Length: 161
Ligand SMILES: CC(C)(COP(=O)(O)OP(=O)(O)OC[C@H]1O[C@@H](n2cnc3c(N)ncnc32)[C@H](O)[C@@H]1OP(=O)(O)O)[C@@H](O)C(=O)NCCC(=O)NCCS
Image (tube, rainbow, N blue to C red; front, side, top):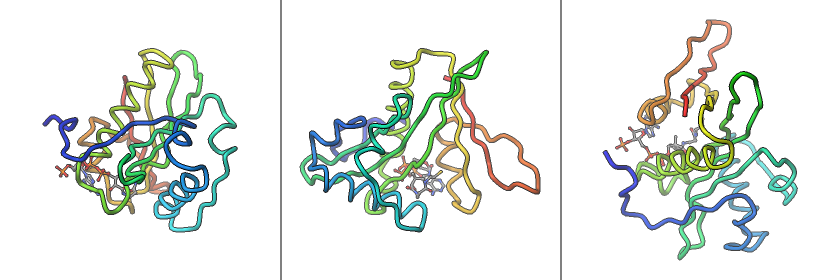
């Protein structure tokens, strides 16, 4: 299945490129709403959240005409010899846009960005609560789940790129 051929029109932008597309206030509000939906509690962001760490990146899929952020994620590098790891966080597609292939496009764009920034031979990881019931999304992308013990139900999804 070629998930790049989705019918929705999207633009990919990274980090503060978002502020070239949307006003700062609108951008912070939209990202805050998406993360609040994910965490089920209010998330209020400031510009510093986008500029503070050189190795942490935000990636967005934007519906440029509607001025709407459709999907967001973060990824950050940990230099962990012998192999560096990239940790993915805060993956969300806006509830109005789910199951259109956008999350898949977003993750695939992030893999390309990771290789561009840090080269190949990276281990990619993310942790997830099984309560979120979205294992199918990570399986469809090619992640495998690392075994967990009964004291800690968190699932660790891993992939090498
Ligand atoms: C998980 C999430 C990011 C997926 O985004 P999306 O844009 O809807 O994903 P896609 O449309 O690219 O999904 C691709 C495939 O992944 C699988 N998939 C997607 N969401 C799934 C879910 N909730 N449960 C099981 N499988 C899922 C399906 O195989 C899907 O293909 P299909 O639509 O042809 O069946 C989105 O549902 C979301 O934001 N959920 C709430 C927040 C969340 O759980 N984030 C992840 C935190 S770790």
